[in-house]
Image (cartoon, rainbow, N blue to C red; front, side, top):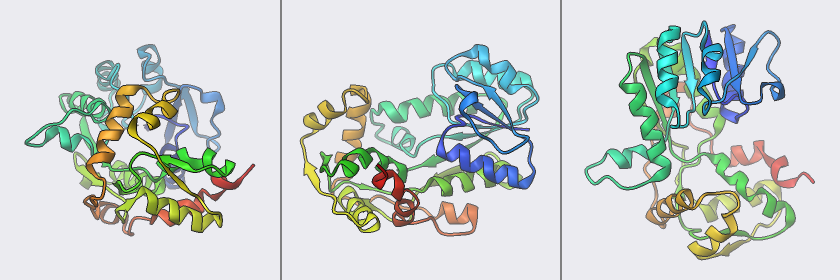
Amino acid sequence: MILITGGRGAVATHLLALLHADGTPVRVGSTSPAGLAPPPGVETVALDLTDPATFPAALAGITSVFLYATPDHITEFVDHAHRAGVTHVVVLSSSGVLGLLGPEPKEDALAGSHLVVERALLASPIATTILRPGSFASNASSWAWSVKAGLPVSLPFPGAHTDPLHEKDLAEAAHTVLTDPRHRGGRFTLTGPESLTFAEQIDRLAAVIGRAVTVKHVTAEEWKEEMAEYLPPVYADALLAWWESTDGRPVALTRTVEELTGHPARPFTTWATDHTADFTAP
């Protein structure tokens, strides 16, 4: 049986649908399992990755795990998983860890938390497959409130490049490495098909929804003030440093999605079309 953590997330939802279609036994973990709506016959379980008391019940009878972990209690989670008989973990990490492993390691609070999780798993007897996506296309959802309200989107680096990856592509890649033993233990860096600036993403979003969307160029400090209620300063600083490093600089792309799924990665316009209601519904 496969355990999917973070069951309310978009990647987990799409992955669950793929595994269920295969007839694979799946259990879905969430901090609020009552709010899940899985397919008939799929078991749900309370799983809070910050609370080790929830680990034993969630892991009982599990052989593989799709894990989007926080670093807080990752050692305890790995220990419980090993004792429960888990033999394979697919961990959703970040390509940001590659900058921490390079010849000139950099400080990055966001990537650092993923690296802690990777190292804990790699130090264990459990076979570990690592998915390292770049930028999620769903990051654009943070603009939805402004777009629906007819307000400009505040951006400190509108010319910063990212490689927006559709959550369906990530879920399909996860499905492949969970079910095909040939990929077990691999390290995979995944990107979308294009390196786009934030301004280009907004232009494409506007074309899809048929509504003009403007950009307000703000300073880094102004953006941090706007985001203070939602984003701790240490993470805001990490994002700003990343965006500044790619301002006017296209990011490197991979063909990993195509290699794992058999089809090219979906373009950002496909993601925008799939999520039109997020930017237009009342």
